[in-house]
Image 1 (cartoon, rainbow, N blue to C red):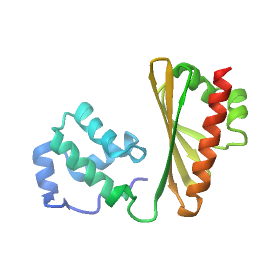
Image 2 (image 1 turned 90 degrees about the vertical axis):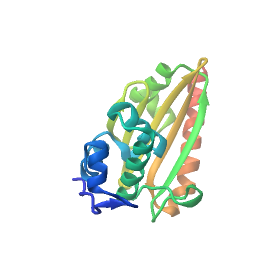
Image 3 (image 1 turned 90 degrees about the horizontal axis):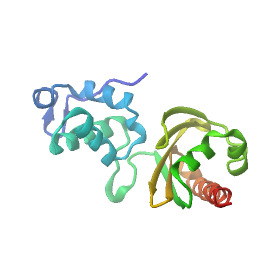
Length: 187
């Protein structure tokens, strides 16, 4: 269950002010963004979602995104470091295959076992051919984004809520896994 927004202002913007300008309170925006999966999005993705799907201006999309990130404890601090004890590992690789082929390698259990052996996870959300959200052991979460351009696909894996002690190991794990994926799809 999502927790309620605990503050009635973000910086100098009160709950009344955000409602007057956007039509919704801070708590309402947090619920909308939670439902949209914003915990696994970066700041730019949240702001873009607010602009494109909810019609907010650039300024208000930024303000609501920052307020949401602060409330949910996912706001990036200075120099991009996550605030608090939450860490995120991101690895990306370009694969010489179509997005459909890469997507299929995530969906087919036989293929998955070849390049991501012994992985145990539940798929919590998908946007076919674009996005996978995975619930990973240890209460961590993984977002997989696929971007195709000129016959190759960039695979971006972001593993969130990672203890600092596991960050380097998981970065190596995902790098090696994506290298195996590239090798399988290059055949």
